[in-house]
Length: 224
Image 1 (cartoon, one colour):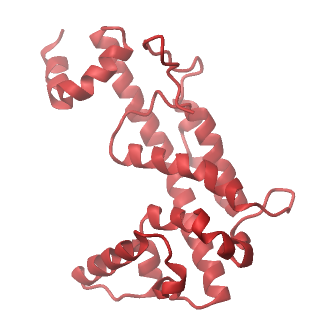
Image 2 (cartoon, rainbow, N blue to C red):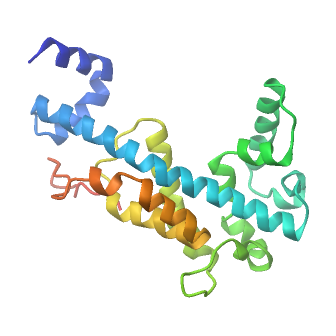
Image 3 (cartoon, helix red, strand yellow):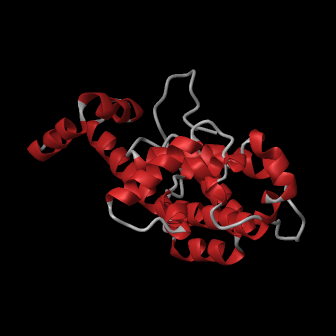
């Protein structure tokens, strides 16, 4: 093995590289190829994940502003999930530290993806019925149930966090989740979904033959 490959293994850490090595059946060169593939697919998913996150937060903010006011997120009635208050305080702290004015637009952008996905949790079911259902519609114009949106979004959030923290994702059923990302974006904004389709490299980056990993018999190699 080339010294450079040994150095890469050392940089990745034994624990992290061991997982790729297991998937490669002990083939160290293939393990590095899997790592490269994981990096490329993470990069390719960043574009549609980014658009979904931006579309989701702006659609929620838009309908909540129309129904209430543009600083609705400071109203205790609308922050029912346990960690949302902490996330709000953190956004205020970060903007204040950067000496930036606490405008509604900056606050919305500073709040985390976790904050926005929490707005679709069961605790907000009543708010979905009255207001939040307006954020999205099916292609045929019909409305959506909260669960239609929240179920796939929960797994997408986990995937997004794995990408953000440079974790392995190649054992996931990535084509399925890519289509879910595009579908949710389509429901929020057809134009945003078209933009994602145009600029995402995921379809080209994902191997036509799929990803074949060596796994114990008790595992199927694909995350639902």
